Image 1: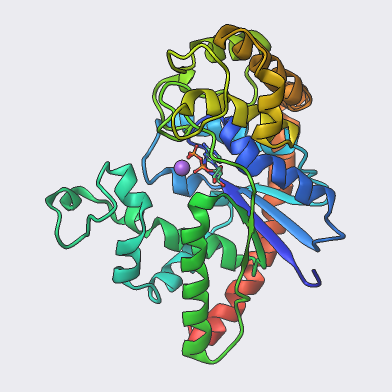
Image 2: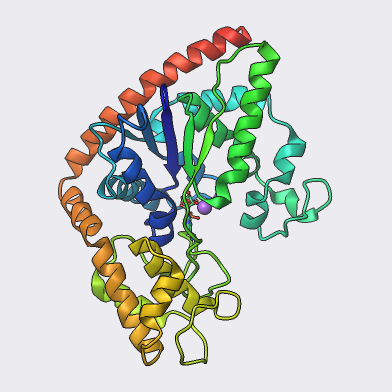
Length: 344
Ligand code: ADP
Ligand code: NA
């Protein structure tokens, strides 16, 4: 892809988990390995300003930021050929967000589902018809505009995301197109989705919910840096069902299917292929031992890299400082174009 720039981000709202790894971070490592080559530039951001939409305690946020950055690098993103940085260190995100908010319709944002799910409202809720939205914060509602600014600030052409983010990338394209046609320019290339082809990893305590950093119960998820004994204990506790056999049946047996999906995702196989291997196991205890072993084995290189990075916080800081400088250079150039275009 000539002239291509990949951009993606992760929120430092907790320690990244197996869902983040299979749905995002592993693919970022693969992008890094083909940059330059398949892609010209790749930029990966720890999006701490997004984390403020549901604000964590400040000390936690500071800690999660460093952890997220270390995990991005541990997952194979090479800070020599990619830019890795923390969003709030580049002021251009907030500046462009304001300008783009002047091109964003309330009606479109009203259709986005994320603010509704974060407020535990159903998908048909609207800012005009539901009393609960009286407490909806502007930042949470406008979050997808900041996301559009993140992507457009670097004139990104490709954005690796999971299924749940496709809606937001559509909005990014909509805003970019709106801006371009308002001024008859092509300042913003319209970014394409690089869909990460992995099934959603579900919560270990409730296979009807996605595995998420924001679940207060830590045993609901496998952290990417969990040591093998912790992985084993969490998987042992995972909710399955009363049928002792081992079959892959996502609709009727979501807990067992989730365990098989994790193995399939980690090993790059089909769930049906994994099912053939695990079918002869005598029950859920044996299945869980097997799954825990696969997780710990597959994540070992990431865990080891992460350990190395966390023993040298100053080195990590220096990588992030350098990343922010490189990001800010690109951001400045885009903002110069944008400001000239709009006349400010
Ligand atoms: P979280 O919901 O855990 O806070 P983020 O919103 O920071 O995660 O998402 C970062 C990336 O990880 C996104 O690209 C998202 O699609 C992916 N992701 C998050 N949770 C999962 C999951 N349970 N399964 C697969 N991918 C996921
Ligand atoms: Na999220």
